[in-house]
Length: 286
Image (cartoon, rainbow, N blue to C red; front, side, top):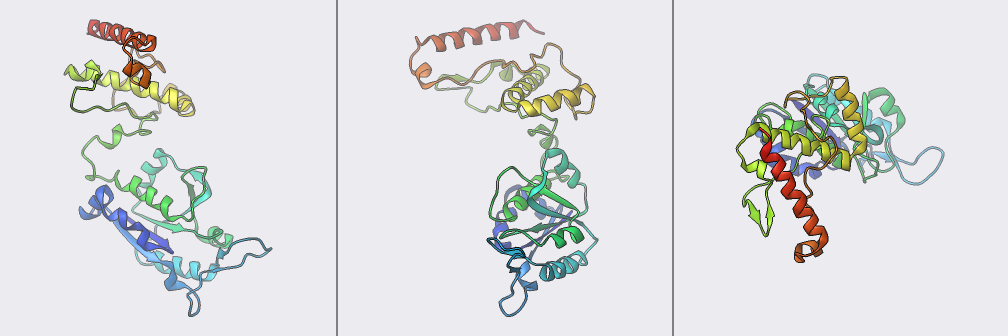
């Protein structure tokens, strides 16, 4: 896959040559090509912007240099899908990232200042993407996030099955994760994760994922429920599990400082009793 980025600040993209995006490029799964827009600027100052018609604050990136840049970059390889990063775009989702990862080539246009001349969008842009309901100084950071999200999905970049465990992949948030030691300052790893019983571990993770989504992202949870009812949710873990307490936390791991430091605190005692009951019930299931 090839992604071309048209930007005023190509140096901002240095982090994408490291970690997982860097691995994708090193292994040949992806190619990132950066194009500094100044080379198409007008006059001795390589001007890219001008004052807006109708007045108002700020400057607007103008048609002549952007048209020239897009024409030249698009002609350098197989034509790609042109995407403009803007707060006015459609919110980016994991589902759309998966779809975009299947394209052989994408061109990302990064705006700056007050934005770009609308005629550029009308003539060239095929898709406008927003990464959230907030504003940053330019399209560079949103473009970096999109590139990272895409590159990590390309074949061979991550270990098999890793991406499928991410939040949003199956319409839910990810489950909690634990590593050694099994007990740290009185905080224990859930016993099921130490049981070696793979089916029970997968069921626990799914239960926690569902519960976490319902608590933290009720909008996402409702969408997931509707999609699951229609049978359209990506699910590699199997069918809907019986006995899952949809939206009910299995055990509360968060305790206040007062609860942690005071063993007689009623909240701590209640939490420990609930945890003992949950463990007892879990041990009775096959």
